[in-house]
Amino acid sequence: MRNLKIYLSSLLTITLLLGGCEEGFDDLNTDKVNPTSLDPVIVMNKAILDATYRDGVATLQMLSYNFGIVQQIITPYGSSLAGANYNQTNTANTSRVWQNFYQIVIKQVVDVVEKTRDDPERSNLHNMGRIWKAHAFMILTDTYGDIPYFQAGKGFLEEITEAKYDTQQAIYMDLLKELEEASAALDDNKSVETSDILYSGSIAKWRRLGNSLLLRAAMRLSKVEPETAKIYVAKAVSGGVMQNNEDDAIIRHTSLYNNYLGQHLSAREKTNYYLAAPFVNYLKDNDDPRISSIAIRYVGAKGGPEQSLDRASTAPEDQIGMPMGYDDVSISTVLQENGVASLWDFSQGNIYTVLKVDAPEFHVTHAQTQLLMAEAAVRGWISGDAAAYFSNGIRAHMEQMAIYDVSATLPEAAIQVYIDANPLNPTTALEQINTQYWVASFLNGSEAWANFRRSEFPALQPNPYPGSEISGDFIRRMPYPDSEIITNQENVNEAIGRQGPDNLDTRIWWDVE
Image 1 (tube, one colour):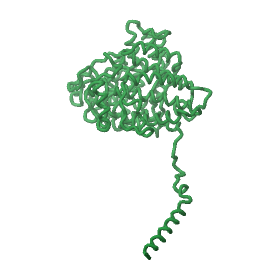
Image 2 (cartoon, rainbow, N blue to C red; image 1 turned 135 degrees about the vertical axis):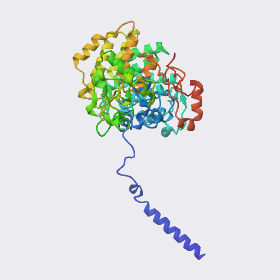
Image 3 (cartoon, helix red, strand yellow; image 1 turned 60 degrees about the horizontal axis):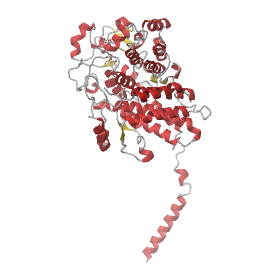
Image 4 (tube, rainbow, N blue to C red; image 1 turned 60 degrees about the vertical axis):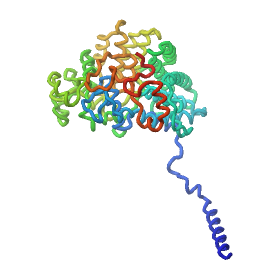
């Protein structure tokens, strides 16, 4: 009995002490420094920033695949750099767009859209989020085909950890709806998000971005559903698209917040990547003044250390692109016929202009938009002068060079001479327009590759590398990441069964033959 009294007395004392400790407990355990929630505009800004390359390694999908497929930038090296240069699967690099967008961008932008959905004070931010979300999903579905869409980014919000894969057709129909609705719903009379890093909250510019993306999305359907494409192209143009280069969707960089593609190509990969011969030859053969802003060659270099400024030339006549179809050993057999001293002697992207560490990155541009309008006009889907749209698109991209760096600025006389020498020819209009789109999308790997598949221009020759793993002429899509196959196997298998083999050959829905 005595032990029981002692126990009860001790229990009462502990209870009283604990009760006393509860006073001020919540205050003591509240972090007054770190935020427990973020303003959605901050999350939106992060989603915009993260849609570019987040670090040097993240650039390897563009460098290994997208740039190589469209034959603008190539490497002769294999191993971790293998990809379109050999037409082979490199699972480390085929998954980088998926990882960056699903793990970061989609999660953030879905959060913005959902948190502002029922807030009339943030309706403009809500619709800005819808536009950027559509942009991000276009990149994902254009890369992989059928993907998680309607359930994506809802792991925290709705505890969906194994998202269902949706057909690309269903995704595109919703993207068109979202872009049309969100662009129209932006309202100058409602709260303006001045902290927005893309346009400082400008409703007019966000609306033009939304409609320009609507035009881009509609044109994707030109092969598979031309009637649907025609309807939405007309809606985009009537809604108002980009008017000049000031409307471009640009991510700015500084010496502290780097352009990681530029950083990677001026450091770790400096000696590994070169401008491909088809791209350089097109610019040279057509006396295109952009080559002096884009290309640099270290004339006579016989190794990485000799790629020095005293050898550097941006003169068009000095530029020599690396031919497709060679590795770092076999390339030695064609050095003499190409007039170079070594593989290090081929032209590269200029790390002092378009690829400097503080160079901007372009997501959607006035130049691209004008060229798409030129094609739409040729097809009879919109009114207007196709030739004028065409020349406006060329001019816009040439003037865009100055945004990279003042030293890349092209003289007005040179621009006009080129435009006068390259009028739109009705018999070859689609090839001319989409070849110019190829040039205007340089360094925008996702868009250059998507439009190449859609239009089949420029008329590139297949990569002749003898170790190719593909059965067709060009890589059509990226395979799903191994992580998805492991953690979301049932839904992945359903998508593969519907779409086709999970390889580089399978065409996505809008990429019909």
